[in-house]
Length: 474
Ligand SMILES: Cc1cc2nc3c(=O)[nH]c(=O)nc-3n(C[C@H](O)[C@H](O)[C@H](O)COP(=O)(O)OP(=O)(O)OC[C@H]3O[C@@H](n4cnc5c(N)ncnc54)[C@H](O)[C@@H]3O)c2cc1C
Image (tube, rainbow, N blue to C red; front, side, top):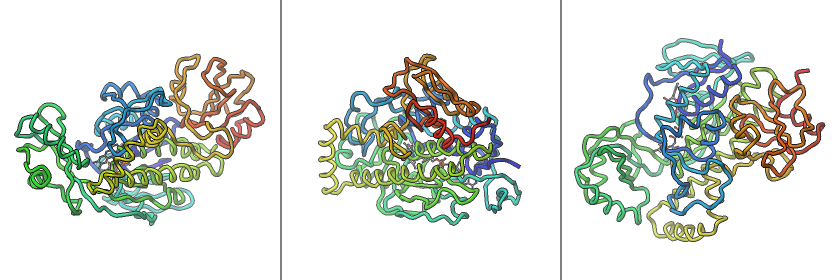
């Protein structure tokens, strides 16, 4: 008997497993692939995800394997420098290929004690009042208290759950692969610049050691289960560029569409959905992996609280209440970006206009905060603007705030040095720090770093501790 079975060991499943392990939840991750996949989808982490890594002590590992670059050009590829003073201590893009992200997150989950079984596909399940019986493709049955489908866009769990997945099907398709080329770099650069004047979905970029990443849109959609061939790439390159650049020796070839869909429910009883299993959208702005990892970060401590027995009755349902609107917003901004990437004259004119508007600092800042997810504010009710937002990594007496959040517990940051977390001290840490850079007396942070309360009154604090962390231990 496990507490939680997670279907899928992509970035969402691995992050969730690690978050649950911080609270000693018995976790089994079932992954249908026997080996990690080597082809690259996501290629970067945005600010909020970088912050999450810092909050769990993982950032050094990621920085070691990645490359920091300025935040800019992330909305529909419109190149504008980031505005000054973005509200983060980690205001950069961290370029890092998805296979490395997946590996680091899986490694982290295993280090914390999660079991990962590869070559095990979830094929069915049944839930009852006490738990879920999960059936694997080979007929083996396993039992857990909860099941979370982190099994990607074609999620078996979502389908078996019967949850609606409304939205739009793919209307365009893009071939993507890594391969060698047979013409000099200068020739490629000149041609790519010329095509990208009007076709922003086209790309051919060196990834070192003679290998190029080729991204080339195709007309219409095909069966995505069928991988493309090198000949498909050559043909499409000739159509768009008038040359196939002599491409050869592919490392991997794949295709992706622009289907845009959102699960109607993130939870049905003891079964939940997260990551691509709950939402799919085109990769414009590079948000899907980031969104999934952030879903896991939101869900982990709540599900752990439910299992440990201290969750307030409605806590688990705040997962959908908070994350569904965030995904809705991401879907919408990717729809908008896809329009702006069109080669039609109308959308190109809108793109030029938006590029002009982005010269206004506030417009640029708004779009960057949206894509990097640092602009998210959950609805925790009436209160100051900071309530419901994540708190940036500020300097505190002991160093950095995020350094105090590695264990995934709540934290009261008390500048008055008068308050106490009392009977919640087994779930919430306390830091008296009059020097903390804050313009409010005290903040209560949830384990995901969002501000759950602001004030200076002990009774009010106790009410909010109950709201988020259940009954006190004594
Ligand atoms: C071309 C492209 C570029 C992208 N670029 C970016 C980017 O720059 N930034 C970004 O943030 N996102 C990007 N994305 C999106 C990102 O790749 C996904 O959003 C991310 O991988 C979702 O993670 P996940 O863990 O939810 O799902 P997945 O990564 O799909 O993982 C699901 C896992 O579940 C396993 N699985 C499936 N079915 C079962 C089953 N029945 N039982 C057990 N296991 C199962 C799969 O094998 C897989 O390992 C891009 C996507 C594409 C296609």
